[in-house]
Image 1 (cartoon, rainbow over the protein chains, first blue to last red):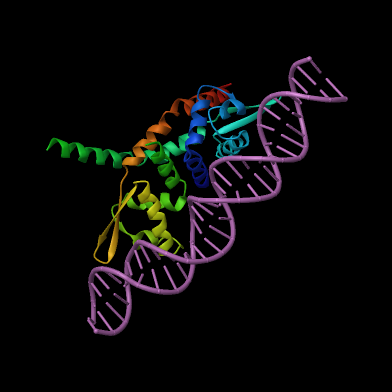
Image 2 (image 1 turned 135 degrees about the horizontal axis):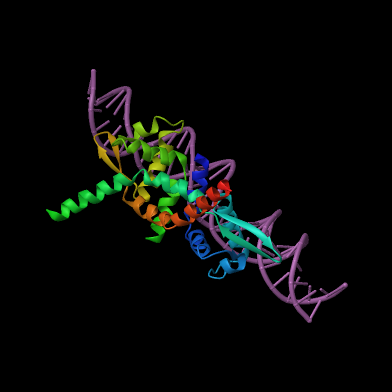
Length: 103
Length: 103
DNA sequence: GCTACTCTCAACCACATGGTTGAGGATCTG
DNA sequence: CAGATCCTCAACCATGTGGTTGAGAGTAGC
């Protein structure tokens, strides 16, 4: 569970990977679809997908000649829960900032 | 802003670093305090703190012979906001699961 | 069956990361 | 001043990461 968080946060720490997740929010996509927006080789994209898959954020399934990727958002719930425990700290900071502005 | 997210998520992708942030929720701590729970050398902890500092999550300030570390939670607000855009997807998944259980 | 297409895998590369040790700057204490 | 303490920095090492290319497995279409 803890090392899962490692994997999830690591998966999220790369802009291309976050962009791929974003693309998958619109529905399932083939690897080719996901690769299209990038300069990267398809093999490179495949490696990124492997990282996302390792974190449980993406599922790949063969469909004929193509491979379909689907979003699996469940692990993000854990990540969100972890981050949210800090909510009061950044709110405190915003409060202090607002107070400062008001003075 | 985008590469900030890279840095924040990367900083969070390591259990020791998350533990250091957790420790800082209780208030400011010296580097020595933060290092105590770990087997790691103090220099190793210092490097982790540098990563957290680079992501804007920790601020270090010299105080006499010691160095005081403070939590800066603001960047977590951005991370949280990003993750939260996926909320409906993991809720959908939970809904489907619950529906499955009910059947 | 042959060819074209989609994708993964292995090998390779340059570079980043996570850890160590040792040196040394500052500061406190005696 | 001398010594101990706290911490950072540089150098180093092993391993991981992010990208490439080339080969090849599997499928679709002619």
